[in-house]
Image (cartoon, rainbow, N blue to C red; front, side, top):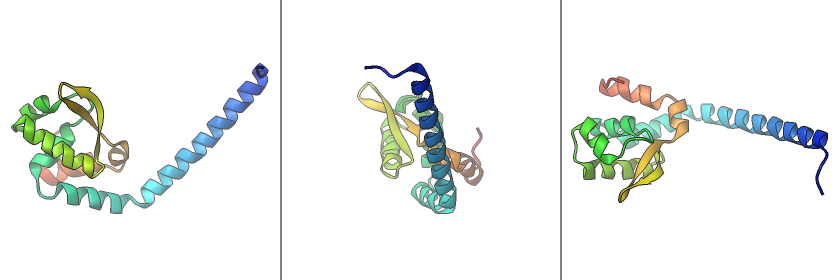
Length: 126
């Protein structure tokens, strides 16, 4: 049994309104925890310019070999840094590539400005 088109449209509008409310609540929650989240992220990066470079180059497109070229590192060291960043919740696997994964940044840290903060702290360009 199918719903009439008007009912479906109203139901979808209702879902959209609820989703908008949930997103707004999550944004407020994220912003209220901004300094704590950034502080934790920065403690994971520590004083490691290489880890900051790996984080910044992690984009959901480049694999460890490509990031290694950018950061002048061995691919195995890039993979090790990405595992540390993943364990800390700063990056996540996006899709498999060869025997590893291509990682992407966790969106909330981008929204909080972590990439800009790292560029500033370590004097790294875009």
